[in-house]
Length: 324
Image (cartoon, rainbow, N blue to C red; front, side, top):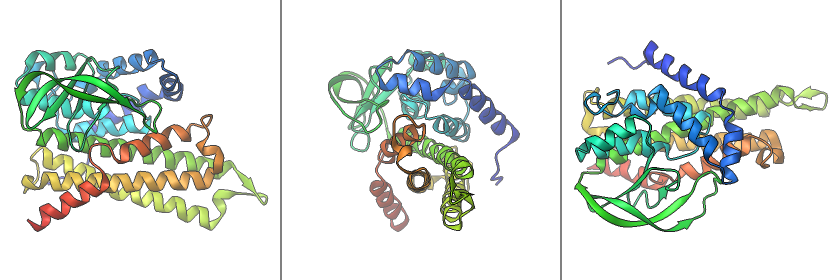
């Protein structure tokens, strides 16, 4: 089994990274924080043009028909730029659910750029950014329904809204297991992207911040902290790619895909959390101010750590599956 990304994967990542770098995401996020989501809609329209929304939509339904590997490669870049909106829901989980429900028309709309959100209790109790999404869904007891927003909850990430929903019209009977795994893995990919950016910001700051007449990056203690983050990121990324291969059925024992997804989610969360803590240690209090871009990544990291399953829930699932 080949466990390396192909050239086409690197090209996909580079094209998304280039497009997002030109979109001034920090300004887009700050506008979203203030209630202006129109700049965000333009970013999502550009993502749709690159085919990101259509990755997991089959060719018969108007999509690209790619797999989980391509999905995590793309979503990691969205994490690197902290793209706001229902990323895991639209790009990963919803296409799987709608495909299982044989909702061809809805899948075609998603392939063309329609944004979707969903709640999948108990691990996904809220629908994220329902005011931004064209459609909201709820899965309860293996029944897919439209979702009706009844209340809202605050999030540490100001660009993220959490909606309490109840079931509306019944759509179809579904098995949400694969959709959950894809959503959790997409969240892990976002977290590893966030971790990489926070590491980059911290490293760049350490090269320019002077203390005692020297760059703080020259001090051994700072070097070691940054090295720990780099190791955590590089150890977590292969777990994400391995879980994606398992979801695509490209490993000798694909029945362990759920275990691999949970392991990847835990490792990516640990790497991102470590990157956020080290980032604050290197930059100091300025890193948490709204004026500094690091704060945008810190708050999104904190929000995604418990999204699509808490670390405790995923550790418990790994334990359950390996001892079954």
